[in-house]
Length: 72
View 1 (cartoon, rainbow, N blue to C red):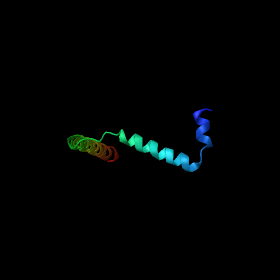
View 2: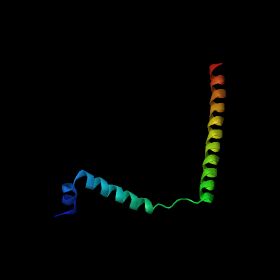
View 3: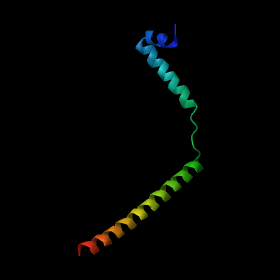
View 4: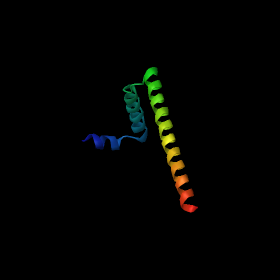
């Protein structure tokens, strides 16, 4: 019998238990970032957010002035 058929024939509790075992095994493979990596990633994120904010503010200012010229 195929593995698929064996899985279908098991009870819902056995399938649930198997799922939890597999989840735990996958979580063991996860590599957590170091403190330094986390700080660097946070710094890069904040820099990009600041840069995008400034660019959007500049576009807003340009379009505001352009609309003032067009409407007056």
